[in-house]
Image (tube, rainbow, N blue to C red; front, side, top):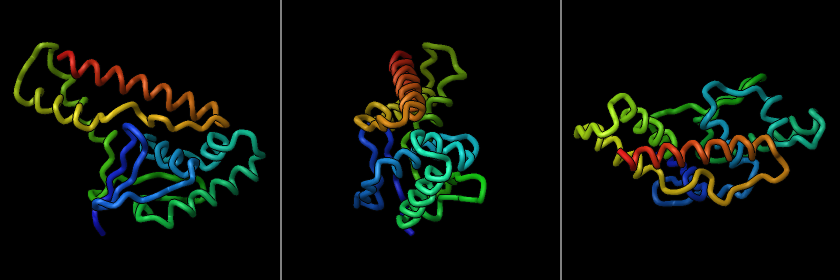
Length: 169
């Protein structure tokens, strides 16, 4: 299997080699983004309520199963770990995510003092800025999910501040 690249900075995009994989379902992209940035696999109930807050739990869970099925029809399937209670995204070597790279590089630059221009810190800063290609989930919204929008908005601002901090070093 060839490497998959998920871009969440700028417009969300998934690439395999030089081919863009189309995932037209906005909830599937939202689910993928949320799973990619969850420290622990979230519960199915939480995900259903997050993405389909206007539906009953039964209907929201059915929508989640259908959306998970859609993602499992893509090359992302080996990275998705679903149990009866939770859904998670593994970070195998053949899956690259710009946000993971940005977070890793921005963490490398944190321990030193501001103004510390060591080669390692400068390289980490370059790599982080290279990964940050624009606002997190730019032009991607789920107007029917206030909780998702709050989550995405908080991350947009945090990543923007991190990028500005890196540029100021």
